Image (cartoon, rainbow, N blue to C red; front, side, top):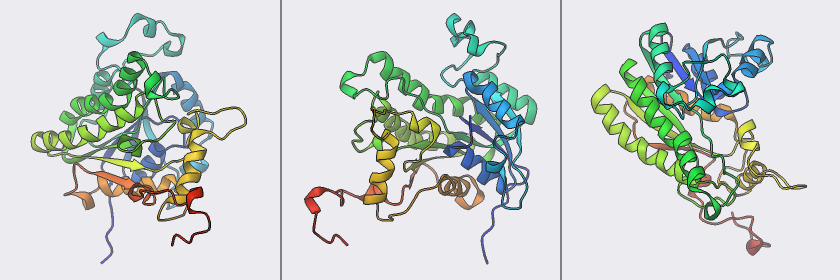
Length: 311
């Protein structure tokens, strides 16, 4: 008998959606295909642009579900995941024109708003990261930049689970997104972001134990291969050269065991499994969705191997 996934009646909060090009959107779409109600958290400085895009139908083509209907985002919450509570927000942010007219965007406040709107929820996806000095080598990264990367990309997941676990139904799932730079050297992925991803994976294991025992929740992370999303495309570009992510995509296709394109839907489908009842006993894992690149120890497209058949 074929396994089916039915998430009707389940509510999924995807933190870190601002357009339709990234993994967060793909995960939301996969969960919506299974019937889940989708709510999202969006960084305040881009909130108006995202909401305008939604209202103007900019993302309609990317919203079509398997049954032909359009994915509906039930609610968009402003979310700045570097602030845990209102007291953490500095005056410079409160007075920033990009935050004008917005409030309630700290993690604690968003959790309270979600509880007021939905009571209990079932799935939380952490699909956000930021490293202000990501283009700098670690040797040139400042303490401020390093800690900012850890705060936005790793501790934000801890804080989200702290604040949202109490309003999640038992058997619910928390999922984040990581990257192979957590354990292997990826030149060009700097600013402390590799350190932040290592923290995120370590925290996934600890939180799986703590949230599993205290709330009956599962906690996992997906180590996704390179995707040319808007955020990733912003990482490092020299004049006349490819972006960092373009190099990463080309390298993956040349060296991964499965020499094929990676699509955001591949990550979305894995997320669907991990957050659904089919993944009932899976927790504390880093799930690789990268065409197997993580298992490779040598670059088969290296000039050292020219003229040799490597398969």
